[in-house]
Image 1: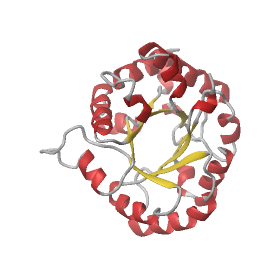
Image 2: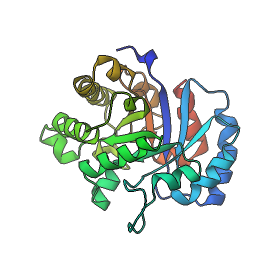
Image 3: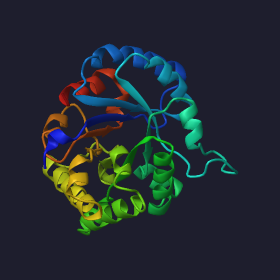
Image 4: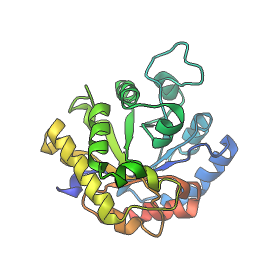
Length: 255
């Protein structure tokens, strides 16, 4: 696999953190720290209420702004949800779908992830699709089966052409927010398996062109080693994305 054919993407997932005022201050502080570091793509996926502020604050910088979810319907009686058109109206460019916290706490399934992914692609977003196994699944030695199923169902009816706008983030659930991290070898092994699944669904060229991130507690101590793996093309960053010094260091590590 030729890693040079893929974009390295360092994306921050702020989860439920930061007010609009804090968002503006954060981006103003981050922008000069990542200026000119364009060998990777820098993305911040912020809470819905922060998107418009983030987009305005990021104007003229190399920072891209994303959302953390999107609904599969254009509009309707879906209390608490946000549509693709709403996200477009406030300037979002990227959208995360299928994060394990959405699956664990809010009843997200492989099928609803597929529906949300297709809605986002139809609206022209760059989509970050999360897949990953729980500790129980890893201990039962069904990591590859779990991740393969999640990937295949999420990509049902997604065309080869649409894959140009899909990033896959491998997030072992047992390593999210726990401080535990898969070893670089464990992470590489699963990312390669995901790439093999893509080759089976589409073809080798599509698999080779798809960015696959690692997202289980990547931080300033382990990023260089993880990013050196041939099938890991960036990171979906949680806690470290809330600190400008740490997040900018991760962007530097990706250069």
